[in-house]
Image 1 (tube, rainbow, N blue to C red):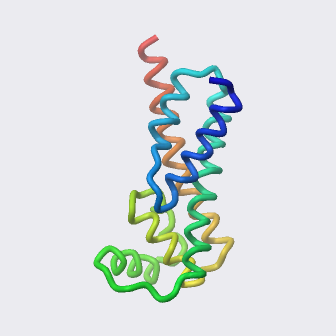
Image 2: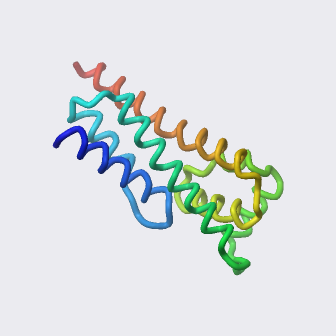
Image 3: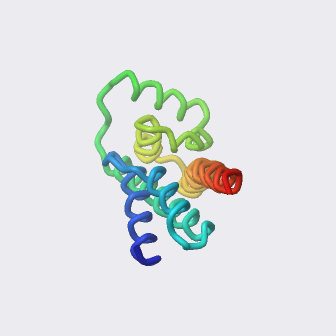
Length: 142
């Protein structure tokens, strides 16, 4: 697989994984880290950018959405956001709950820059940990 195709595939998967659509960006990142010669830092940055932009897409959808209907997960996400504000988006990497947090952040019209910052940090930490574990595992076995 060429570097360009690998990066495009990783970006697409990372973006889709952050939306309500299914994705497998973690599996793809680990696969690419272990099988291609592309700079691991470049792979990490592409995954972070794609996933952050996907999360921000959910925020935009939330800003455009009508009032959400009540649901147990929705209530939990709403409680976190009302209690902690934008810092709750550090958990935006969580499956399903993270998507809800991003949607509700948009619906609640939380400040754009703080929302962007906390989504970026939360999603970055997940990919950094995954990359470090993968690369340490590779060096352990070599």
